[in-house]
Image (cartoon, rainbow, N blue to C red):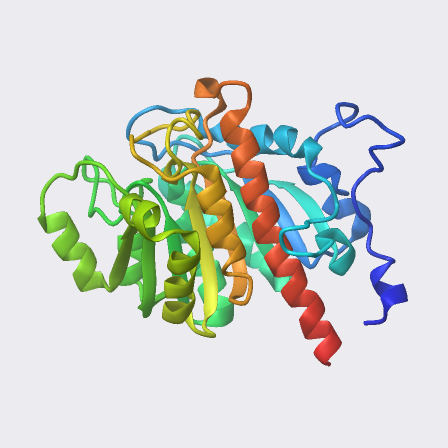
Length: 325
């Protein structure tokens, strides 16, 4: 694609002409998908939190992230890229999932993801609770085969059931391993910490193929070394990144359903993601933002910047792919 073609991408509203606080909130003030027809990266919300085990409210997370993203600007100096000039990024609105029937909601999210990915877009999903990662992974795996997974979270999310329910925000990655949609040679939890039900949780997790980088590991070793370790584990496999905002310490993300002390900083999370820019990121999600517990949009701001870094990585790779043709 030529530079003139790239200039045809429709980007954010010009904040020097229309104040950031004016008008409806789309992610980063980007156009809606129906305004551009097709997109290389579709930012989509899933307002669903019926799978939570403690504090509800993540159903409002997507719109909170959109509101906080009004302050994002079109050039990303950390990655030396203008993501919205490199690829068409658009806000695809929300996937309306049944809040009273988890099984039906999972099916709805999967079908909607199938439709978006079928257009050739990569997905940047704004949750919602972590239950939605399973149908998103199912859809991505239909296109790419079993994918590498980086799971940023305070918790493992590989438990078997809660109250007999197979689909909850604490079970998606066990189901994904059981269904064969993850590449078990390239699975990692990042940022885990806090008490568990028992040591068996870690034993089961290891048997599934997960490596673990705790928040204490990040503190001791630093973001660059951790990112290097993760890159080596992933290699050139298609990669899905799933980010529960509670991977951050409650000082950096109070607005979430299951906070745990001792987490990473927002700076550490962003630096690790920037260190993964060479990985083949096929889609991603940011989940568990619960604005009712947020203060001064701290959590939503962190989540919006996280989604921005992920979107930048995808846009850069899309542009590089076009240039190589």
